[in-house]
Amino acid sequence: MKVFLKANVASLIASLIDYLITIVLVQLFRADVVWAGVTGTVCGGVINFIIGRTWVFKATEGQARKQAWRYLLVWLGNLILNATGLYLLTKQLGVHYILAKVVTSLTVAVGWNYPLQKRFVFLNNTK
Image (cartoon, rainbow, N blue to C red; front, side, top):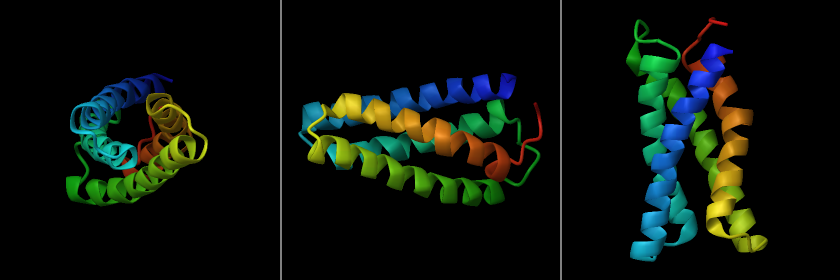
């Protein structure tokens, strides 16, 4: 349970970075919502990997390169799921982009990111 809570804190930090970048790109630079969301997701992913490796899963003994490749695979799925969700909610259903971003990223974080990071990326066996 402790690892799950720490993973959620890391996800929250990464998500805040992600949301901030997305909002700034849309509001200040008039970027397309989906591309702004993808850019935010990339930045959040880098932050999440660093925090996950060092603090959440304490997986610094493993080879960073192997972890980074596994993380990249999981993260590509994350990116596709987030971009698709954001596209469907904003472009097809007319949901405000901030709400769409929050709903999509939370769903993907719990259903995709955490399980795969724990069991595949960082190979953590802690309870």
